[in-house]
Image (tube, rainbow, N blue to C red; front, side, top):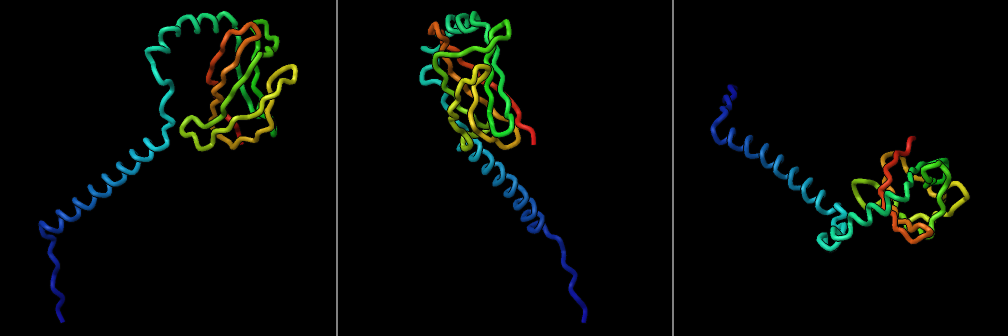
Length: 154
């Protein structure tokens, strides 16, 4: 019994190239749709209106001279706000959202309490990069907004 030799024809090559490009296009479409679906989106409803007071708000915030840092210590998330002399700042109001920089599914709003040195919340975060998007109001009414980037180690 003699087996017939199979030949690679133009249609076979076309099918191979078509299949390869089909897989590439399908993966690219999946990644594009995933990126658009998970992007948090809108930062401000009207950027022109927000820009009209930006310089004034920035100057008032910089005049406070605050430095902000965050870290995970055991089961506590610590948000430290300090004056230029290194002393802790107690704010009039603090709103903060903690989340991953790439998506919003892990976002949470911790209940920060001032302990005399920093703001502490009972939260245990997984290892990796995190952001705190905070809005605080100084005791004199000056608004302060900042995104604090920090890393939680294993």
